[in-house]
Every structure is written in structure tokens, then in C-alpha cells.
Image (tube, rainbow, N blue to C red; front, side):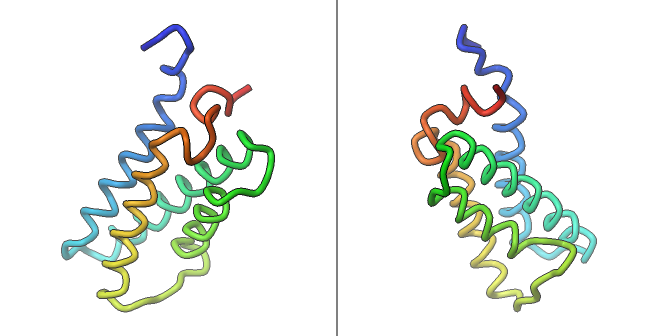
Length: 117
């Protein structure tokens, strides 16, 4: 933990890492309730990343649009139904998207330092 206060943003990092793990774990066979939990977790985290990306750059950008789309795709209120094979591809792609978000450069240079003014 450095003097810049990056330790305050550990929950943002942990949330994204957990969602990556949940998405990769979803490649196996699970009960339906796991996939409902996955939808809630991915939607919440995607909205968080989209908000941080928008807030740091003060404009609509590729990260906020991409994670907004992920939130729509995974939303648990009005679920989108796809085949298991398609969901596996989506899960891998979205896990990669969240992994890319771990780099400050994509969601905004100030993303880890400036999103909670």
C-alpha cells in the first residue's frame, strides 16, 4: 500500500477478481441458483466499472459502453436466455473484459485514484 491511497480501492479490485473467478467457475456444471448469483454479481460489478470509467473520463467511452452492455446482458431482472455453449463463450469473453479492466489505462488513468472524490 503506497502513499497515494490506493489501498482504499482494494474493494474495486477484489470485486473484479471475484467476478472473473465466478465467470470462469461457471464453465462447469452448477445448479440454477449459481447462475442467478452470477448474474447479480456480474451485473453489479459491470455497473460499478462502467460508472468508474465514465466518472474518471467525464464522457462516454469504450469501457463504460462495454461494461454497460455486460450489465444488460447479465441483468437478473429481465434475463436474456442463451444456449449453454453460447454462455460459455460469453463467460470467457466477459472474464477477459474484466481482466482488461484491471489495467488503469483502459478505464482511465485516474480510475484507481480519482473515482471516489
